[in-house]
Length: 141
Image 1 (cartoon, rainbow, N blue to C red):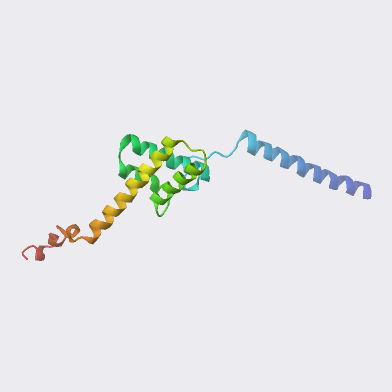
Image 2: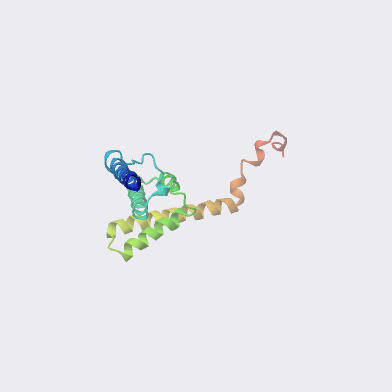
């Protein structure tokens, strides 16, 4: 009787191990997880850096800063210029190509100029022109 109980337990353990091995083989080899339409914000650091470099390359080709900013916004960074600058610094420390570093610096400078221009527009009274007279009762004043 004890012998039957030992065989039963061994069978359960062997079945569990074999089932787990088959399940892992199916999950890793036959039907692995594929990510589609994933946000760039969840990328691994090296892919994150590559994405920023691609955005800088696209900006160099297109010259469209608004589009570059829109692409960088997908990274969900509070300061996109700082993120681009960090990638440029990592490439400088590593064995980054000079062309790539120049692209990143160019994009960083454009982003910083754009932020400075926005700040200037908000502090000058010029940004209020046209907005105060949109109400009918103020139009006559």
